[in-house]
Amino acid sequence: VWSAVPAGPPDPILGVTEAFKADKNSRKINLGVGAYRDENGKPYVLPSVQKAEEVINTSKLDKEYLPITGLAEFTQRAAHLAYGAESVPLNNNAISAAQSISGTGALRIGGAFLARHYPTSKAIYLPTPTWGNHIPLFKDSGLDVRGYRYFDKSTVGLDFEGLKSDLRAAPEGAIVLLHACAHNPTGIDPTPEQWATISQIVKEKKLFPFFDMAYQGFASGSTDRDAHAVRLFVKDGHQVALAQSFAKNMGLYGERVGAFSLTTTDPEEKARVDSQLKILIRPLYSNPPCHGARIANTILGNQVLCDQWKGEVKGMADRIINMRERLYNILTHDLKTPGEWGHIKSQIGMFSFTGLTAPQTQVLAEKAHVYMTSNGRISMAGLNGSNIEYFAESVDAAVRG
Ligand code: PLP
Ligand code: TYF
Image 1: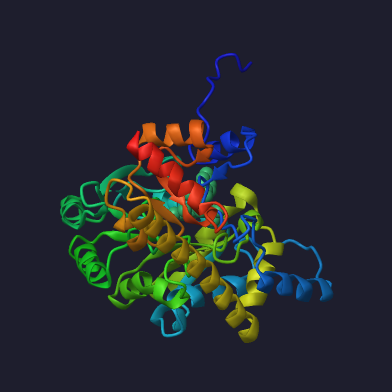
Image 2 (image 1 turned 120 degrees about the vertical axis):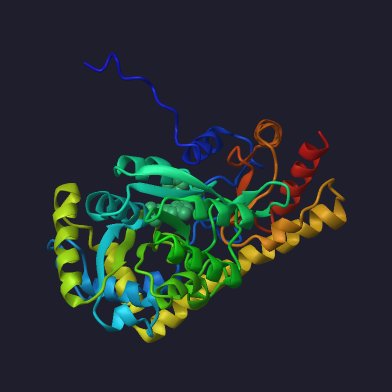
């Protein structure tokens, strides 16, 4: 039956982990997938998450189905975390939300909802480059995927002129996907002034903003600061869509905890949108899993635990910032590696777009057992005190050829 099914390529990011696993060398380093590692290179279960699990275990909850849109307390608290206590639509009970299968599931619910109900356009503009999965995800949702300029190779910075002119040239009413913070893969975010300009263009062109917030707290160490763009757009009067993930900021990767939300005009409109989210989700997976949502809900719903969690997010962000500083210093001052490496320090979030070329990344894998995606992106969290010097020396050798 399946003789005509062609073999497809592996996921370019998760495929790096496969190659890493197959390498038997003891110095090997995996800087491919964006998953936090502690100073010992180990996955990190947050102490606040462990505490929340103890609370959940002792309360002996049942395992009944959640509602179609998930744990309502959790989605309410997730909205509070993203939109902020002052948010007008939040306080007017005008945010429609559904628990999702992490950020990917939230994006997919959003893509499907827009394809079905957004009256103006099927076109969605994604930054170039963007998280690889965005492209098939929105295509499979039934949207027409297009790009807007984002990265300037010559400055290893934001191509703000290109971004502005591409958004201004987009058809009126098109959807635009914006990384709320810690842009993946470039690590380059607009400044607050640039966000204000983007908001203005979105308003002039009546574009529909869809925020992907997979790293709230990971960029600056503050969940409030990282929510700046989302809150600014809502304050500027935009109705927005938002995909939230708790994979990174709570370290709940495999628990698949996320939320999709839409700001609406009033509670009556919200109720109609809610009903359509249920109609959309029901035939997809019926209802979401409960354990991870209970963990996030327990943390967000307890002031002491929530403050502890925010401290732990900051700890992760700070360790990454420290690795940026050290990598920059080793390359620039110790090794005097040819090239300009300032972007390693100025980029933010989980990733650094190093500027290494595809052939250089191949040499690094084959000769040094150092793995990263072929676009030169490294997950900063894979670096630590024990491997950063070896990594820098390997990069130095690869650059010198
Ligand atoms: N969006 C971006 C930009 C990401 O980098 C990721 C990956 O972590 C996701 C969404 C979705 O991840 P998850 O489905 O694990 O929450
Ligand atoms: O970009 C990353 O590394 C993370 C993790 O299909 C990820 O966003 C990568 C690929 C994928 C799912 C998650």
